[in-house]
Image 1 (cartoon, helix red, strand yellow):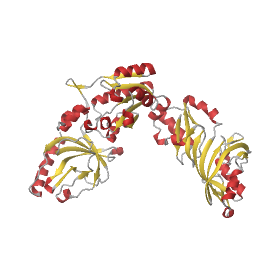
Image 2 (cartoon, rainbow, N blue to C red):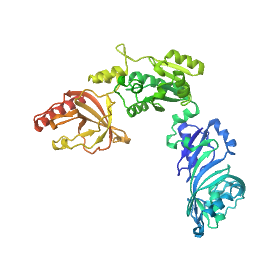
Image 3 (cartoon, rainbow, N blue to C red):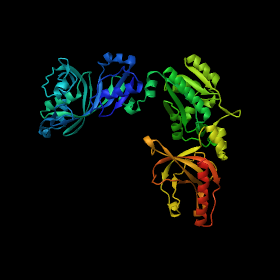
Image 4 (tube, rainbow, N blue to C red):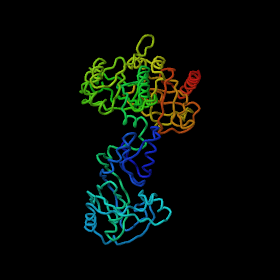
Length: 519
């Protein structure tokens, strides 16, 4: 079962089709149609849950909407052509409207709209109405258990209503207009509740991914940790999660944290980060995981015992069926949740546990702390080997002073990096820069370049900055998000006696950088 916050526009059938395509299943339905123009809660059911439809038919439904007085339409809502108009609404006051609404509180006989799915001699009524044929439908009993005037702003009447299954709210709007003697139609409608389910618990249709739906139906194969850097050791754990989840028909899930746990429990020991939260999410998603959860790491979370974290977070919130961990993993208060404890919890609570061994380089386990040391000391080759990719940072291009253009070497300037981000030692570097969506099919493309990381002493600027000259690029990138990959350090940041001397050195830097990037 999935709760969808349907926007106005798509039909209920459109949303069902979207779920069918995401899951590759045909047995998908819903518990109560929402007209295309209406928004709100649509309860989707999959597989055996479709049997709930016969029970859900009796569930009440709650709505908020607007009745517009003075105009009737062929469809009884805002989508149909005008069928009649009257200015009699201008003489009405709030008391008249409240009295009219009160007359529909309780049971009454309602005539379904001509444009409805009610069958007439085996054919849907709306099909006949679209052909221009007269449609006369018999009234049937409905129950309005609540009908409240929320706002009177003539010709608009905002209302809240709770009605029985089978009630047409646009039919109710039409009937209120007839009672007031001015005619009316339903202008807007939002469904806020279906039986026990509420709109605030729904998700937009575009967020209903195959992984999300599999999780809702079955559960997850999960892992938990900081995953700073998403290095080769992390990648082995994540690959195992994806493999196991696909084999069991479950969703693959990573539960990670922001900020880094040490920023909360021991700030003085908190490390600079190899990957900021958005960078981590992008890297993990690219490995094929269905879902990445960035959980706020708070003092309250830090105080949870391992047993509480497994029961209240992994099991209750994320429907974990199997837990995959790295060889040295620990979680919960004081990292007391070691592998022995997790195995005992798994036996007691009925979930599976799997441990992935370390990935080693020359006998040494690859770790985030090892890579941080390499980056901090400028050993980019070792960092690349252990990460499985070049070390990088993502940032937004902001407008600079334009000095590069005045010396014939235009540059892009990145916004000051997050202070939590670990950077290599300052200097001039050969770099690759990935630009978003400029390639074939909207894929990112990359340009080589050279970057000054640090101050710009020749211009008297002490502030640290990332300023990049892209090779063979012409265009504006202000406001775009780009990713810079460090390739090799060319030299230290230097002070030059003149602009001419700086330009000469930049020319030599460009030759050296191109040679490195072309290898």
